[in-house]
Image (cartoon, rainbow, N blue to C red; front, side, top):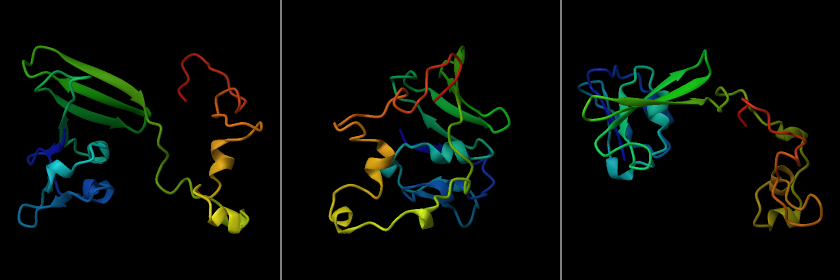
Length: 163
C-alpha cells in the first residue's frame, strides 16, 4: 500500500523527499508540505515513513500483518535503537505495537576503503558477478557452492541478540 501524508503534521522538512528511492515524494510549493506524487509507483520500502521526524507519513498495512482498513504508524527511537510499528485498527478499540531493533548504520559511517583493494582484472570485468561479490558473499569458500551461515562466519546464536 502506498504511503500517505498527514498535512497537519508535516512541516515540509524534506527528509522524505531526500530518502525516497523512487523519487515520488515531493514538497508542494504553495503549501510547503510533502505529498506522494505517484502513489501507484510507490515501492513500499517505507523509507519515508521511517525517516519522517514528525510522524506525518503513514501507510495502510497489508493483510498479512494488519487487518483491512487499519493504518500503520512508525516510531523510530534512536536512543533506544528500536523501531515500533503501531497498527491502529479502524474500529479504534484495539491496536498492536511491533517492536524491532534498528539494524541500519548512521549515514556516512560505512564508507568502504576501496583504495586498499586491488583493481579488477579482465576476468572480473567480464564476469557477471559484482566487484568482490564472491569474497563477501563467501561462495566457493570450501570448494563448492555454499551459502554463508552463522557458523561459517564463526558466530553462534545467542538468546536476545539480533543478527
